Image (tube, rainbow, N blue to C red; front, side, top):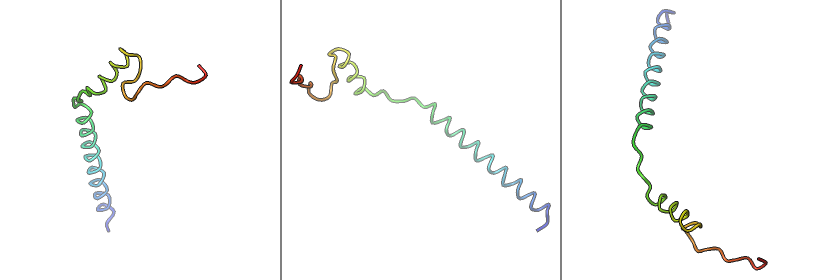
Length: 67
C-alpha cells in the first residue's frame, strides 16, 4: 500500500475516534445533568431517627445482661 494512502487512512481513523470521544463526553454530561427523583422512604427514615433517636427499621435492641 502506498505511504500516502496509509497516512490518509490513519487520519480518517483518528478523526472517527475523536468524534466518538466527543459523543461519549456529551452523553455523559447529559446523564449527569438530569434531575434526580426524591427518595421519600430515605427521608422518612432519617426523620424518624432524628425524632426518636434510633433507626426506624427493626425492633429496639434489648438491654445487655451486664448493664
